[in-house]
Length: 516
Image (tube, rainbow, N blue to C red; front, side, top):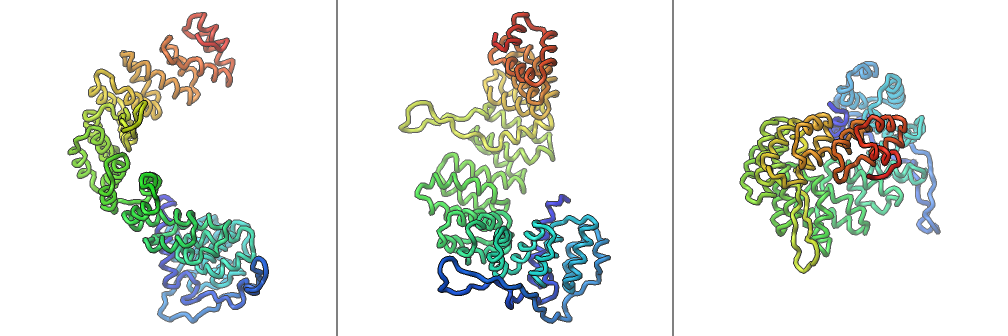
């Protein structure tokens, strides 16, 4: 398993353990701020509110129920466990662990090379429940101190934020980032207490990492009272994840110009909707007029549907009558087969080129009341990713398929795009294929693409050999490639020039850096 895959399951386990008291070190234990907060001196104090920092008292432990689960592990047995088993077993052991036991386990875990941040956070959460001040004072680095403040805030945002405000420095940022991740509702209710310099950290966590925070229209209305656009923007992605259709309608209502809002919101929707929400995208599409935005929403809905029903998505794409839109939808459906069934993916590419060989040629759209050149319209969403995937499996077959549907080579942009994708992935393979081509309409633009790619890889002799094969054709990149090589390795470049099959006059021009 990818180490990054551990986080979601552990995060929900962490939340569940909090709910039953297993991360507290003892069932029912809770931090009691007896005299341990920075207290306001007086509402009448002039200027910024004064505070007095007092020692943070250890937690008062409540009795442990005899029915609570018990761990049979010791620190020794825990440290001998495979990494995949440690988190859950450690959480149960922490039910009875005291502060010296926590400190000892942490030290031994680090000494044997333990580096799992989630394991350390679990320790710090329990430690800050038992004794926040003791945990923070025992930190041996600024990073560890920062993490312990975050751990404290993850279970007691009120006390941690108040204490961090008294300490200052970077600690309010640590606390506020944890509040954004674990206590979004508290953040929303007390947003005015979040220092301005710490709000960015809190909002980032709220937007990207707060697990399954359900945002509704009511949530957005409550957030609007703080009159901070950054807060609303941070809530918008989790709102999309909760209810895409209502999020779309809410965003529309905030903008006097629906077209502007729609395009601003589109990227967030593309990142945050999931395959179970295709119905919401279809509802959104039904509210939109024909045009680019509607096509992009429909394409996203089909992309999500293709993940769970690729065959059904392909069948739907085949019924589309408009050639360009059919090509776009075929690409979205075909992407599902690139690695699971390359032969079928190539078949879909054949259908795509049959429908629209000039798929890379943007449509020209005449706009009423506007003079001059018509708009070039939008590029086809997903087409290039699909075709690049097919190229990675069988580039020769794909190129032959395309050329069969464009025998007169009118779709120059498609040929250039396919050549570019191929040469980027496998320049040697592309060069071998290009050597078999005799039509200058294929060979010359292909050679220019190859020269550029070889030069990017600093394969200057090979790049210049291909440039020589272009002769005096327009846009021959020989001059720029030779100058670049000469600036990096003058001797090697001049040695190549001496043996190059070029007229003496052309060699003299290159030595002088001039054009023919």
